Image (cartoon, rainbow, N blue to C red; front, side):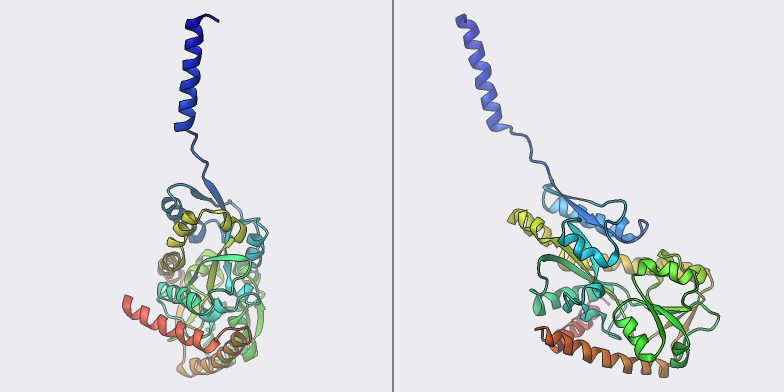
Length: 348
């Protein structure tokens, strides 16, 4: 090889080595598959989870991003299992379906303690989790919890439901857990199941009333054509709580820095944001329900008092069951109720 050619070749090699040491390719972002079991048009799929995804990406400086499949990867009761098995990396789970695993977050689903301040309830639940049951989730990472606006009692017939006798005469759809247990205690016929199955059950006339869902759910699950009236209570008969879950192995594979970043945009921050969307959706849905001619009936005080009495028995049962499973049920319940009250006063 001629000296000039040899010199040029060595120079090119040296430059290549230098560049490889200073300009290595950027590492690909870690992508989390986040499942959404609600209908695609629901704010959970369109706004809430995507908003959290933006927060995660910003907090991790682009190192972690999310992807939401166009269709749910598992049925509503199977969200925990889908995350545990790695089918999805992150998913939202209705806590009523996992009460056999974790009873703590169902404290918010006790009867007649719900308020219209869903963000306050959500923050209170996360604080209760951190104080009273931080280690209850086993084999999975709990990222956040939230509570949605209280559910109401709806009639599909021309006669509203406004007495215990009315309830006993009805066949009622109810979410599993508190709602279904209250209705069963009264003696009503109960059909229980996931909210996403409501349309099929209600539209086919399998039931003639339903309980435990808010105006937004009546709209989003396309129940308006089959609904005639709503019975409102002074105290929220029931509210639903959810958990945001992450695969534990996927979580442990993230750097401590990215874990801390995700924590900073989850917990109470995510819970309040998710709940605020539900409040907004309910206000918008109420206008649509009013336009459709759905009447709003104020519950008779005697009727509400009888339901509260039934609810008291269920609350005592929850406290006892929580205590049997290693939690201080009474302390957790009292803390949650007091924090909801304090946080609601702070925002009102």
